[in-house]
Length: 288
Image (cartoon, rainbow, N blue to C red; front, side):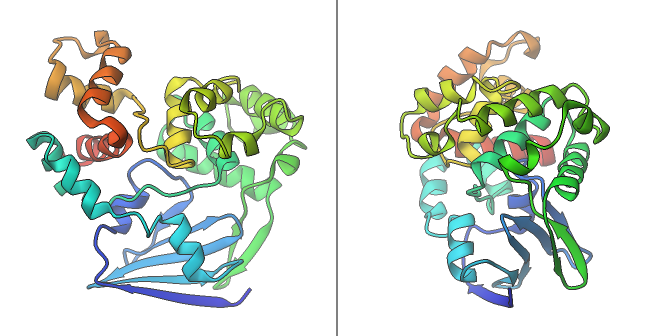
């Protein structure tokens, strides 16, 4: 594959730090110059913001413009979305101004499932390390700029790993979950193509939760970060905290029921709940 370059000028709502550090992805790393390099599929890209330019440079299986447009959802009008959400209340308006360059990526469904099973009760540096070790052992090496990158293994490639193999890569209690999930998808007990092609949120969530290690929150993350179901509202400790502080105001946030938060989010944010969640999450974790 030859190196390609794509430059966007005067493009709003795109800040690499906001995109790659809002908790939605684990294979992008910051470089000394503030740019980010990552691998997705068989594509390796460096993304750099330089003044009013966004520079994408790397090697892609297809045309770099098509690849970037799909992966970064460049056709989605985030200015319109932010304008709509900002009118809901001042809290959301503040969180949007803090994370104004967030965009939800369109990530591979299979990779997102495994990544978010690994994310359970885990921190981001450790998640990234585990995924990197899995990719190095079971994926394929691609070289670019004299550096080695490793593709995330396919279902077939990862199915070669035993529970013990996964344990040795540092998965902890998640080893059995990843193994069993891989086998279920390999054997078509869960059909990823059917899930991809469905618009039925309840069906998708029900199917995903049949997989070991996929509860409600992980299923919502998968739907948002891979299938771009913007209406779902993943609730983790940070989201529960911010929703309680801003709206519910229970003295003990651990006693706040997730159903109460989900209902509130649906009422306030409707079909843009997932995007509201990202702005609130990033603001609370990084800045508030």
